[in-house]
Image (cartoon, rainbow, N blue to C red; front, side, top):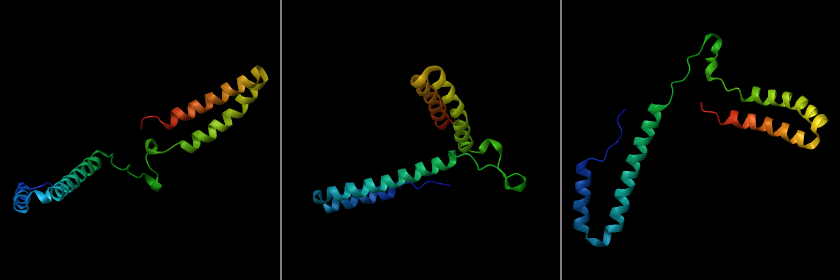
Length: 119
């Protein structure tokens, strides 16, 4: 796929029109050229972003996707809650409120690092 370019002829014609109109229309001319450049830049960056995307995972039998492409966020949240209950009980019994805060901070830290891991 080719990205739209600003042809040299278009810019030459725009400059000729600017000379004919005179300095009263400089702001309008600049706005028009900037808009065209902006459109071309957005089209080019959108095309580059599409080409850098990973291809979609190929479906396995039964429509399942490859295991590496799965998002395990729900499982991580459930396991965190299951681990937080006994950890908080042990922390309160042994260290009181400071122990509870440390245990909860550890669970939060694990979830925070999991959610911002590189994919």
